[in-house]
Image (tube, rainbow over all chains, first blue to last red; front, side, top):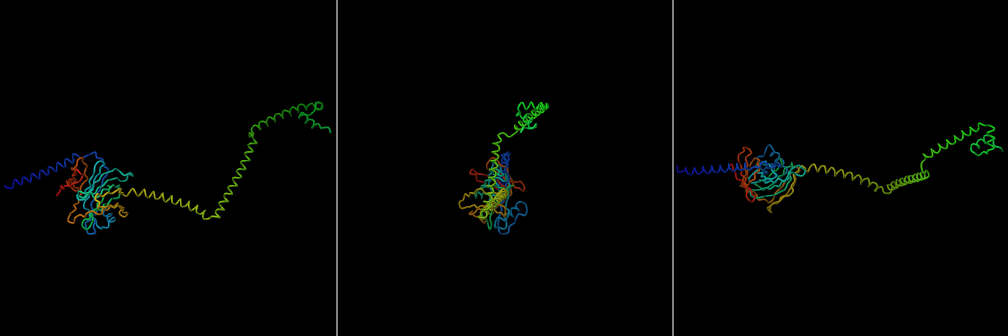
Length: 162
Length: 219
């Protein structure tokens, strides 16, 4: 019985955290903009490229991109760490987050002049720092961004228009 | 010598016979008066027809004939100058065979270049629409450089960042697989849900300086 107040306190703290989380999600839903104009969808993935043995994707988009990574870089194996397909909007910034350690901020600048692809302003973030800002025209072919070294390999972001 | 009757009749019709001779003729043959009238009428008729034909003639026939002769002379001269020009080319080909051949070579080269330019334009226009382009890059850290290339083999645009600090060996890189989220009008309210089960995964907050901060919602 002596521990009851502590247990009650923990329960209260947990309930408060859950209530806060539910309130946050509800707030997000309430403030969504249903009229936001969608310019397209971007697939972003984080790979670890190495000459060592890692588990590779065996199917889907990640498998196809792995084969292309092998042709573009010197490393022989590429492990998919995370992936995120995100809609991008003409009036809002979008975050493509295959990892909370390395991720992308994307601003749409509208369709390309030739009608094939989309003009984007990309920022590659590593935690709280911008590694590179770039203006690109993203078309059918993907863009690979080789980032920092990690262990015996490199972290590589792959971006493709969906 | 005295004219015969036929000669006198002809002179009479032409009005050149004296009155006494006319009287003698009519005494000898009174029907000659009607013959003379018929001859006179026939003459008048012929003169009228001739006048009609003259009216259909080319006006100023002399001037027309003069211009016609001049034109014939001009064309004759032109033919002779063409002939002389042909002779000149032939002579030129004999004297400067290399120069003549170069004319043909220049024409052929022009046609080949034109075909090559058209082909290049077609191939270029069909290929540029596929590859992604990097318009510009900027690295805020002066120690970091970004180089861009296109890998034909991989059919991908590659940006390589050099000079970035390594990720510490002991640090783990956590990958996630979130769903697409809808934009919201407020900062710091974005929640990423797990693609596999739809449960909240990460909360994305943006501070006043525009810097992101993630909070894990699933442990």
